[in-house]
Length: 418
Image (tube, rainbow, N blue to C red; front, side, top):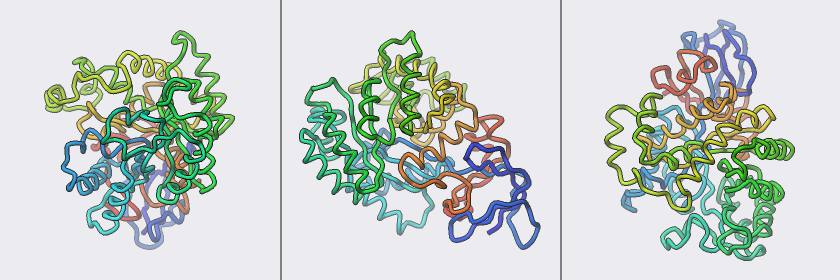
């Protein structure tokens, strides 16, 4: 397949390449070159070809699938992957849940006929004894290893690494408390993951958790941290320097803190509608949903607002320092669908001051890199999986051109035109 008459925005941060043709063979990009005009081709209509989007942090067993009967769960989550693809999201990264369900979904997708986003998953995550997200919920015990012994944790991580795409740890809680994973256990899990060639991503709370996770060898930090001093940006400057020096990815999940912090605020729903995230019909449905106005476990609303506000003020300087920022939404409790939560995350990254090419990189290559999918994944470069979006307008001129379905001409998924 040759796609001709396109401007390629390859996701690497380089300048757009005009009047190009893109060659696809056996589901991968094999050449990106100036138009030759030779041979049959697909007309790109003068549009912009960009990598397919990646959801860098979600949980398929979330707000939009939790009420589904157990015997229908795999099929429903598989359909959710189709919903992601319909929104231009070609790859989905699940940061923790039932390993058995994740493996079933992967097996189901291998024979399913409907197109869907590719799933990458952590399976069971690691946490402390009765740590987040287990706490006292016995039903959640199956999604986590509750660790109190580093040696045992190392063995569990070695066994898990053979079944998953990467490993997830929750490093959240007060130091020394039994519900917080110990530093020694965290370091043992990271070592086991690296022995097996797998990346390890770490959920954090405060900046000291970021520092210790990096010291343990973490490959990615999940969630914007709670600052000690909200009036100073120095903490962000210091964390940025640490992340750059260690080449550690940062996934702030801004939309998580926005939803938790502003849950129950009618003006928030109005703002989402103004930004094109909600329709007028979505507002009453969400306002009457079970999650609306309900406190979120473990994360108080005021604290979540602080995390959001601080991240919005400092992500621009972290980007300028060279931090590799990846886009992920985590939860979708006030969103009309889980895929739309990622689109809101991209909006928030832009509002936080990231240039639009950096927003595109956050929603493509940096997600792929943080989970170890290789140097070319999430880009339009020879050797990369041929996942792409053809847009009618320049995504580096206006973010709406990237996230609005009105500007999406078609989707390329694994070399298949949809």
